[in-house]
Length: 178
Image (cartoon, rainbow, N blue to C red):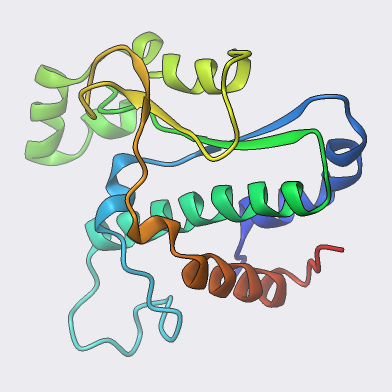
C-alpha cells in the first residue's frame, strides 16, 4: 500500500520550497481531525477489536494531515527556512461525492455550501499575506461561514504524536528529510 502522500510529495518538492523566498504548503484537513485517534500499530484496521469505521478512519487521516502540517512547520523553523505550513478545510461542501452518500447525501444537499464557497478557506490559506505557519483555516462555524483562522486542539499539537507520525512517515515512504 502507498502511504504518506502529503509527506512524500512535500519531500520531493523540498529543495525548491527551502530555496524560495516565501514558500507555502497548504495541507487539506477537516474539522474531523478532532475525533481522530491514530493507531500506529494497526493503520489498516486488520487487528482491532472494533470493526472498520470509515468515519473514524476519515478522522484519523485528517488528524495525520494536521500533525504533518505542524511537524512540517517545525522542520521549516529548525532550518531557518522562509516557508510556512498551514492547514485548511472546506467545511461541509456540496461536492458530487458528498451528495452521493445515502441519507447523508440528502442532508448534505440541503445543508452544504457550494463548492465555490467551500474552496474559500483553502484559497485564503494559500494566498493571504497575513497567514502564519501552524494556522488552520476553515469556515467560521466549522461547517459553513466565512474563512477564519480556527483553533487547533491540544491533542493535535502533541509533539510526541507529531514526532511519531514523522518517523513512521519517513520509514513508510523511504523519504528521509535532511
